Image (cartoon, rainbow, N blue to C red; front, side, top):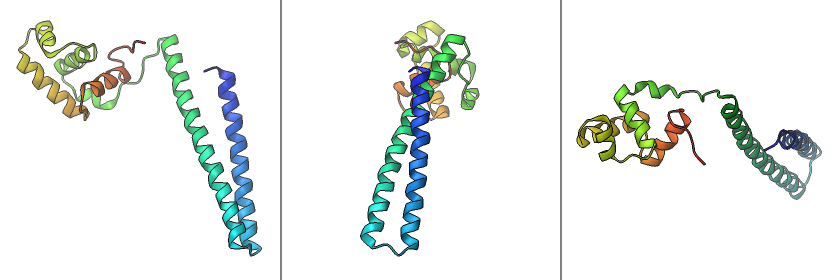
Length: 153
C-alpha cells in the first residue's frame, strides 16, 4: 500500500472521529431536551453504524500499517523483534524449530542433526509446549514472526 493511501485512511479516520463526536453530542442534546424514545433510538442507531464503520476502517488501517512496517523492515534489513518466549528454547530446540519451519519432516531433521527420530519428536513436543503452539503451521508462523526463517511468497 502506498503512503498516500495510508494518509487517506488517516484522514478518513479523523473525519470519522469528528462524526462520532458530533453524533454523541446530538444524542446528548436529545436526551437533555427530552427527545422521544424513537428519536433517541434513531440517534443511537446512527452512532452505532458509524462506530462499526469506524472500527472497520481502523482495522484496515492497522493491517496496512503492519504491512508497511514489514516491508520497511525487509527493505532496510531490520530484523523483526524476537519474541520473549523464544529464549525459553534450548539451542537444539531452536534448530528443530528452524528445520520444521523450513519444511523438513522428522526423519529429515533426525538425519540433518544426527539424532534419532524419537529425539526429534521430543524436541518438537517440548518447543511446541514452551511456545504454546499446537500444529506445524503455527510453528512455521512463529518462526517467521521471530525471524528464524524468512517468509517466501
